[in-house]
Image 1: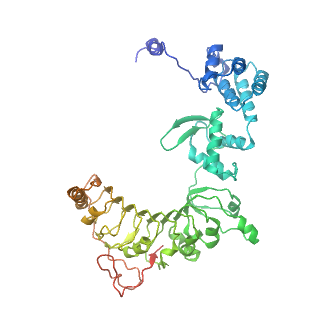
Image 2 (image 1 turned 90 degrees about the horizontal axis):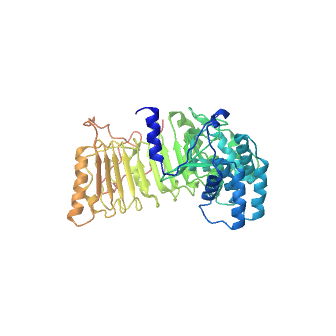
Image 3 (image 1 turned 120 degrees about the vertical axis):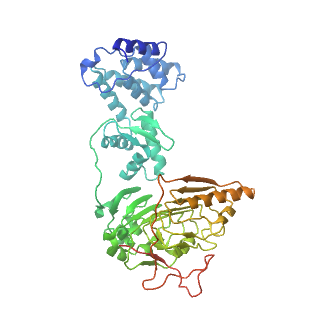
Length: 509
């Protein structure tokens, strides 16, 4: 780059003949304004009109609008905030009142005038909107705030009308503040909008250890989402039956990483409306977990759609669930991690009537072979298996009637996907990540088989490791019954007539 003069000349040429707006931010000294020219009357009026999408205004409103724009003394922020206020005023009398208010705030100090105008706009907000706007003060200056997070915080604080659908009410409040130019939209993405706060009051930190809430948390009856690294919920406070009935999270939608030892009847009865529940345990939770009755209480969550279980198992006595009835019939998505289930006991999971997504993550299951039960998983659309040490998947199209996506990751011992998967007409994707090359070849063979029979071939995606994978021998077969042999199996998923009735077994440490 050349001299400042050359840079200025290049900038002048690139901007010549174009319309543009120059924004000067963070000017803290009055001397900085000395060389700044404010917007003239025509420019002020053009900005005023543009805030109304350049729509034609009735003559009396246009006359009054020009007077108001002139009183803003060329300050763009003042004009925009005043226009945001006027958008909610439908009569000429209201506009005249705003004009008088703006005139009364005229000072020689632009900062002071802008503050007065912001105060005027704030004064016309309802109490709910004032609370929502002031809440921006907890975020650091210039922080980009995801809209979803902000609305959840508003709902948790109880700023909104409980008689209406809270998500819709939060969106209306946010859009109103945006229309009033009190909140700045910085960017919109495909999944959500982000907004920017302009002021810092408190900077929040991050929890570095497990959190145990006091019983007073049950007084936050409007709580919608509770998401932490790992936390403990106490039983609801003792007291009268009526009081206990009132102290529930009736609006709760999401709970993430709740300790399993907290899943007592008292806690579960207080979160009965939860739709998405994540339970995360470790070795410190085992003794108290045994007394919580987790698998006796889950069935009471009659609106639960998504359940994630991250538990730990070594050689301690197993936790037993006698049947699929231990889970709510509403369950659609289930994720298991570190549960060390014996593969046959997935037959219980297969009975869940509405299960659409099953994710078997790190050490969810243990053993060399999986023979899924015939006729199970009637609605399963996505099956993901990640970092599980098994050699054989013995299944046909009868085991996964409507499967659409199969995702296998880090399954280093598995060498083949059964060719019968080519008969699953709904199958759209086989996604393999860091798996055995022989497994990759079998997926390609399924794709070719579908082409040969005239079906739309499945999409096969293969992500290869950066270097060859070295695997050790598999551990000895895991027995779910202490002191007994593994459950006998017959190909096709049928158990021996002498096999014990299946029970879901989970070991924790």
